[in-house]
Length: 334
Image 1 (tube, rainbow, N blue to C red):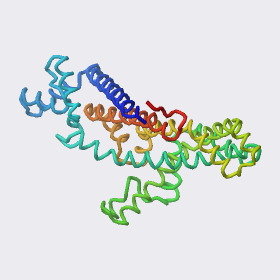
Image 2 (image 1 turned 180 degrees about the horizontal axis):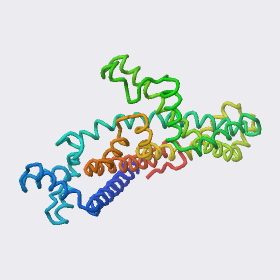
Image 3 (image 1 turned 180 degrees about the vertical axis):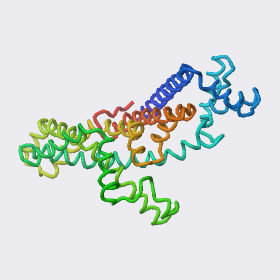
Image 4 (image 1 turned 90 degrees about the vertical axis):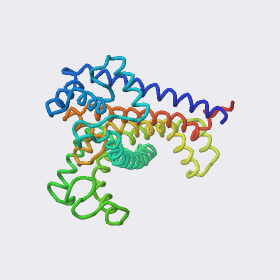
C-alpha cells in the first residue's frame, strides 16, 4: 500500500499532539492543586536542612521545573524534559529515584497481565459468542447468552475479590499473593521461577478473563447473527459450500467489527487493571498510580497518567493501521 507511510506519519503526529495535550493538562493540574505541591516540596526540603538554592534545584529535578520560576518558564522546562524522556524523580519511593526507572520496572508486570488477560478473555469470549449464535435456538446458546449477560454486569474488582476469598482465604490453593513467591524462588531464567510466575498469574488472569467474557461473547454473538443474514452467506448455502468453509467466512467477517475494539481494549486495560493489581499485589502501573495518589507523589502520578494515555493512543493507532490488513475492502492504492 503506497499510502501506508503517509497514513502512519499522520497517525503518529496526531498521537504526539494528544500526548502533549495530556502532558499540558497534568502540568496545570498540579499547579491547581491546593497548596502547590512543588512549592510545598521546597519548604519540606528546607526543613530537612537544604539551603534555598539546593531545595529549589532538588524540587526542579523531581517535578521537571523550578517552582520559583515564572509559569511559562516552568511549562517550557517541563515539556523539554518530557521530550528527552525525563519524567523527574519520585517524592515517595527511594530518595532521588528516577521516575523513568520506576515506570520501566512496573511496566512489564502490567503488560503481562493486560496481554494475557485480554487474549484469554477474547479467545473464550469469541468462541462462546460463535457457539451462542450458531446454537441460538438451543439451550446451549441460551445458556451462554445468560452467562455472558450475568458476568457482563459484575464489576471486575468483585470477581477478583471472590477469587481471592475462595482460592486464597478459604481453600489456600494459592499460598501467597503477588507476582511470585519471594521465599521459594529467585528471579531468573529458570523453570522454578517461570512456573511460580504462571501459578501466581492464574488468578489475576482468570479475573480479567471472566470479567471480560460477557462483553466479548455477547458482542461476537451479535456480530455473527448479523453476518448470518448477509447475502454471501445465503448464496454459499444455496451453492452447497462445505459447512467448514462457510463457518470460516462467517467467523472472519464477524470478527472484523471486534478487531478495533480488541486493540483499543489493550490500551484502556492499562487504566482498568489498577484494581486487579491492588487486589493481587502486582507491582504494575496501576498499583503504582494508586500509591502515587495516596502518597501525593505528583511526578510519579503524572508519569503514570502519561503512560496510560500513551497506551490508549498507541492501541488506537495500531487498530486503525492493522484494520486494513485483515479487511481487504478498505485497502487503498495510491
